[in-house]
Length: 376
Image (cartoon, rainbow, N blue to C red; front, side):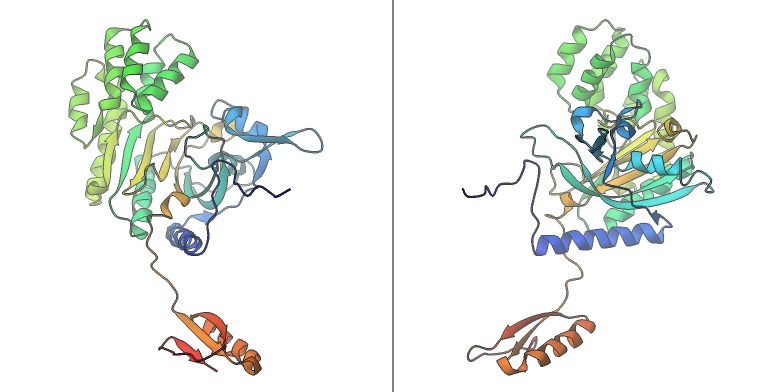
């Protein structure tokens, strides 16, 4: 019986030029993060299930690939890098001086909705700034996020900023189930306005809160959106989050990076460990966000160490189709007769040391050569 040559849903083969693109993207990002003082960390692909599921900031079991080891313990393919880094920071790096700057390039694995078009295996390149719970810490990471995308030469990219305090300040005062809160959050995030309005009509809420939740999906764009937010009846409850975003934007303007930033008050990530500023990056020609991150001040605390942190991750795979190669090697074709194969190998090594890409081609007939071709 013939072997079926299909890939699992959410998987993708990369060949030839796409592999080169991916490696170059990775190389540029890692260099940018390294020169900013972020030290590399590598964690296992396999982790215990409890690391991701036993605290409020964890992942739902249906979002993870799970299996048993030979002792009956549940393992997962890591669905995220931030939680393993929180584990390492609270153990091996517990006594290190703060702030700690960490970078990584690792594959993560998530179970996505069937036929949703999302990858189940993703290469993330990211950073975490741990122990700097200040506006300056947030600005540093946002600054690095913008300049990481700039280093790739990407056209038409934007970083959208939001703040988790906007939705949590409302949800904390609403007496409804966590399941219903989650459903409302998903509808706001996906901007499914009709469904959102219908579900809110069935919920017993103060009219001001209900109207605000209906408007949240519309509150995105330039900093001008903050003026309309301040006119809302509910503004006093979200004032701290809005003023924090204003202070961030002021810093971004002084860094001359305003053109790369916009706002989305209705941004509510599925990952639930974020507590403060949140961000997403979009690139022209890619139909989903390519960067995600934010501040998480409770996650590391749940591992026993009281440190706030902020970070972001770039989805390298999502950039492959729009990325233009910058450092392609010059290719030399080296033709050789059958009695000169060993000399051809030596010559090829000489050329590769000089930085050329070499293709060895046996002579089988008459040939015409150009400046990038050599005959032995």
